[in-house]
Length: 282
Length: 330
Figure 1: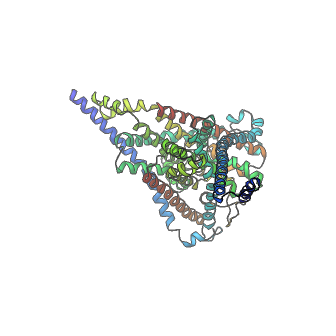
Figure 2 (figure 1 turned 90 degrees about the horizontal axis):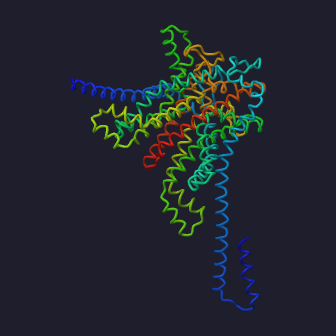
Figure 3 (figure 1 turned 120 degrees about the vertical axis):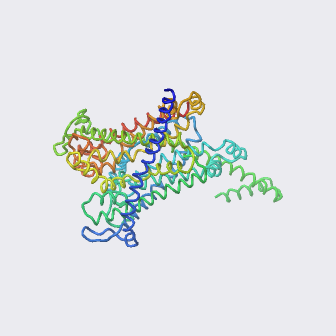
């Protein structure tokens, strides 16, 4: 009787373990399905012509996504230029002044920012930039994306710098270095691996963002390099063409999805490798 | 500018004293003055640097309050005209200026909670698998990284895949069980959302479960508990608040998710009568109608939706973060 009970308990335990393993690996299945499907549908569409030409109007086969590719690169670059210095400096402030009241509020605001839905940031960018400038523009999209990049950069900078031993800082001060040189020449170089990983991660995170660009960069069927005018970007192109009823446009969207997916996954994997090589905790 | 100042300093003591000073002494004096000047400049730069750090930290606070004030300011018109009826009015008819958001609230809650319901067993399984059963080894490392990649895939790609693959599957499933085979709808968007939010609860659950002190687990084992009994009566009660925080963070994601949902939910402003019916969420309404809003009240109503979304997600995220902080500092 007792023996039976113990066997029952052991088999229950084993059963739960099997269930856990099955469920855990079941999570991976949809991801693999999506990856395989998109690579299969998209890779055949990608060729030199696809990368260097503009989309053709409905009814004409062929055409490419040059405008979206260029637009994405420009918008993300401008967003990075805005967000990276801002984010790193804010992270430095948070790690240097752990106890001040401003640091508490600033940290709280960064937490809030991390949870704000991307579409809300799109709305705000619309009122801050699109309306005053009098029209949709790539720069407003960049600002919206920069706001979304901030929390990741700030937090990774702060966490990395907090982990550095105080002795480094004290040694630098003891040599008579002024504060800004201690930070810029000693502290930041020591933590550069963590900061860079955070930057890469934030770029990967915004590369596929669509919602904040809907009312800011808006999209543009032509090639444009003027950041004060509407600009196409990969996620916008995918959204617009995927929801259209035309098969030619669907093909373009599959190719664009494939490129976007490879881009984003590569960024993520490189970040992973970087963090592992440098043993960074993010 | 600096060199002229220096030459002044060199000539002046000469003329005043009226005698020749050895050039070595002059050089020393110039060096000293230069050093003092440099340290003055460095102190100034130091102060400027410190001040600009403070200003940047202040700017983040200004940014968040600016976002909130912009939303409140721009939705004032809608708050004045619709009042509290905005939240439970059952019709959304921009042409007649009737803005009731009950259908969208219902759509948002249905999709989010359904997605949460589907995803929780999976994300907890990942958390327990990585935190307790196999914390090391290449298999668990691969699983951990793969699960994290789920969060990296852009939502517009989830939406496109859902539109092309999931919608036909759901459609045939719907005709099998005898509901109108639309394919697009709340059920489809919940499925996609549930995949998208797995990583958030999973990675948090893993780190929480790894933090359970091993002497608690060993005490239970020494009393003769099986692995499952240890998990159920030691690990889960100990990590309760952390796991709950993971659920909250997932929920916050699900509520604010826009693109994937917009593409597969069907976009109607009618009240959804079943989970297979098409509908709309707050985020998808904004995404669809914002650029089409042709009069100020309409636009303002959409912004008020954004404000509600903002407040709800912020509150949920703050509670989640608080719980994590309390758990990790204990």
